[in-house]
Length: 117
Length: 110
Image (cartoon, rainbow over all chains, first blue to last red; front, top):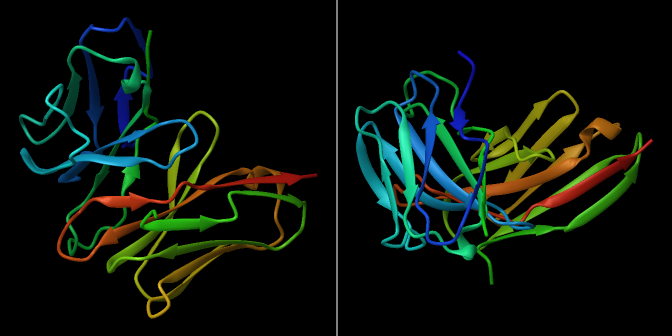
């Protein structure tokens, strides 16, 4: 297993366009998280899935943001009508269910860096 | 005031020095994480702890639940330790989200 992967690694788009990012978690991990990180700040929680169910959403996740994990494996994060303030690093992480005997903690992907012009 | 505060924000050390990074939080937590972020963005989880102390190689993490404080120590620091170190907490109450500090940028000079 190669860890959490994200695609694309970089995205430049014009304001008003839609963008979609993909995250492939570690295969046996049931939980998947999306975070956003702006320059000089720590990551901020966006949303979290357990299998295919979206269990938590941050108030940061406006109506323009939607996340899916249709089969409980990979996840997509879509931003509609992008704004310059959406420019950030979008991080995905996955973790196993607690109590499964596997090492805990969240395993992060390399991130997708979005620049909205 | 942020729920998770780290100090210092920036730290410069000479190779071989003992490093301490501090994290204070103001909320009830079920676990605290220390993470390392290198330039380019990749984040690596160093420790997850809910009590006491953990050690891995030259890294030591401690937590005092009563004082709501954690420290990350690096012994015999090396230039390859240069990175941003981030403290994050998982809140009590069943939430799975992590709340992050802003990070401490460590530079270790040879």
